[in-house]
Length: 124
Image (cartoon, rainbow, N blue to C red; front, side, top):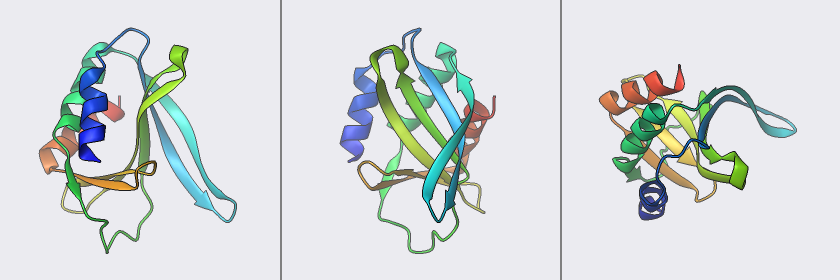
């Protein structure tokens, strides 16, 4: 799974038509929804996000992950109708974070430093 995630990031270069979409996930009786509230289009942020994703570490599904994800982001090429990445973010009390890709049912760990970098990109 990590190989798939990393290869998809590495094989695509940054182009002007790429966008990071950031939103807040919500969960209720009817399922889940994401309310998108930001789009980030600058190439520096997109490349920084790719750099972080290249360094993720795949982990087993956490047993103690009982809270809901705080953020969702995707890296998309809207003109082509392609979402290259789509990840939920669970921020942890120790400053790290866990990313979850529902499509491959994969969990990935980010260090405190990587989490801070991710936050600085997503909170623009």
